[in-house]
Image (cartoon, rainbow, N blue to C red):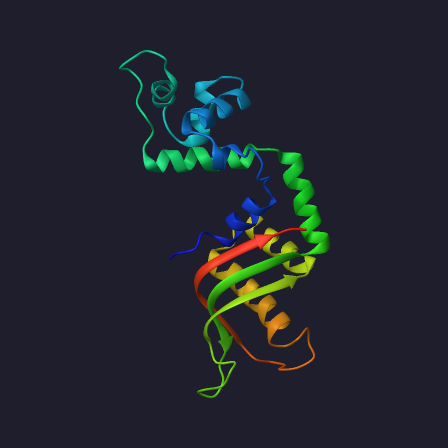
Amino acid sequence: MEPAGWGERCERTVATRVAHPARSLSTEARLRFLLATHRYSTRKVAAVLGVSQRTVQRWVTKRPGARRPPGPMQVRAIEDAVLARWQPRVRARRRAQAEADGFVFCTRARFGFAAPAGSSDDPRVRWNTQDLPGEVARELFAARDAGVGEQQQTVILARALGHAYFREWGRRAHGLHVAFSEVEFADFSIG
């Protein structure tokens, strides 16, 4: 399974889960939300989604036979656009909470460090749930905001997980390189 980008996962974590249109509503309802957000301008919604104004008009028309549903790529773009605009103050407050208090990161992935064969710390698939500090959340959000790629964000998480899990917050195993790959599952949770 190819994971979604870490920045996207962080962003989805700070979004509220109750009645979240990007997760629970139909594509038609998401389009209505985008139209309302942009003062019912199909031109502005088309610019946000990277399609023509006429395409948006075909998606939302009430005329029978004229309506055309968006394709899978457009559905994803609509969901992302709604997510980016849904409850900005709530998202900002939850982001600030994560950056101040930290977050819980739960994953099932190949995790460990280069060790002699058969060592208990040799990289293998394992479940790991760790409380990570706010500095890690700040670093991940800053990386996402700067447009840093997923690979660099994975390095940030690997370093933080290694520090918490193997090094016990700096009490042992200094200087070891942590391997974190083959992510099967990952979830962030905030307070």
